[in-house]
Amino acid sequence: MSRVATIILNRNLPEPTDNLYEHLIEFDGDLTDIYVLEAGSDVERISKYCTWHANTPEIMRNGLRYSRGMNYALLKMYKEKKWAQYDAFFLLTNDTELRQEKTIAQLLDVLGQHKRVGILSPCSKRWGEQLLLSDVHTKYFWFIHNHALMLRREFVESIMETLEPTFMNFVFDGSNFRGYLSESELIAKAYANDWAAAITIKAYAEENESYLLERSDLIKTELYEDNLKLYLEEGKLWMKRKYGFNSRWSMHQYVKFLYESFFEFHPEYNAFKI
Image (cartoon, rainbow, N blue to C red; front, side, top):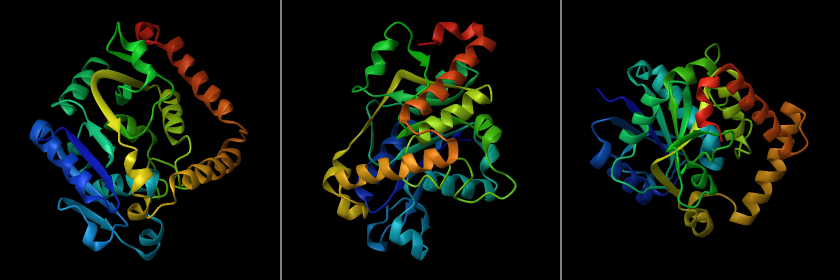
């Protein structure tokens, strides 16, 4: 039985989606089942490995983006009674490129060594964070980019909506459409519930931003600069309404406070603190 459910989120870019799927099958196929969610893709641009095609009129117009898309796929597995068979969920955007043969095997090895890690991210060669990992391959962080995240099932179960779950609220907050600081909110929930978030150099993953820069017309999103502007404007409004924070700094300080509190309760993990 596969230990990990991998979710790849696609909208109208079947080539990189198929390449990512095939890489995982070749090198980690014994450890994972892979689910491809088409988040408003046109029929002629669906991955040949499509699992679900979200195609309501609204989704076809606007897509799902990261938070709603991952909620949609995770909730599908939950309702289809596939949930409990997995130890973890590996969430990938289709512009993720993996830099080694085995990725999932390495991440599972880290989860096995770090029993309180609920969120695990492979590092990127372009991240400054890897400079903090030269002596220890894995450390606990209070900020992580969200294009490649492995979530331990028990952690997800500690925060997910079970009374009235929808693709707007199952794990991520779907009202935060463009995902402004969604990774910070998830990490805050982890530390608030006695779980840690970590980055490891035992696996690497890169985000190929050329798709957003050069193929926004196919993805049916705004041009990169316009999308970034809306990401900030809409995201700051969401953050103010939900948390009362007027700056990104305030959100980071909130998460860092919970991060510091985790080590007060778990001094045995101080070796993995940044």
